[in-house]
Image (cartoon, rainbow, N blue to C red):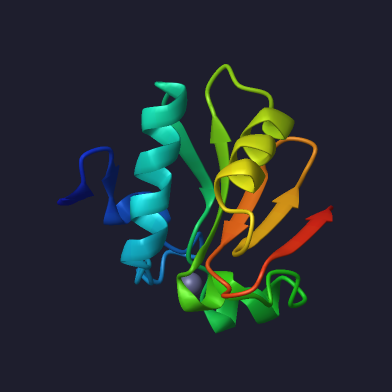
Length: 118
Ligand SMILES: [Zn+2]
């Protein structure tokens, strides 16, 4: 699969249902490259793009920016999720959605800042 940035391919963001939806935001990819540069560790996309069909099949639990290709749930190898969230909150204090999960960190490209713990 063709790379869309130094460390990511479009496939990394594709919908889990196999539909091929992978219209990931370039702004999001650029941010994830910055995460890689900061930690110098692989950034793994746990959930990227989610299509409306799959979202409905899952009871709408991802009804969010995942449908727009502007959100990702990520893990960074060897880095605790809270450390990833701390970095993102410190780096982008005025913008973006940042959600703290037990095993991953959610980041999305909303214009105003939103913070939560899953
Ligand atoms: Zn799908």
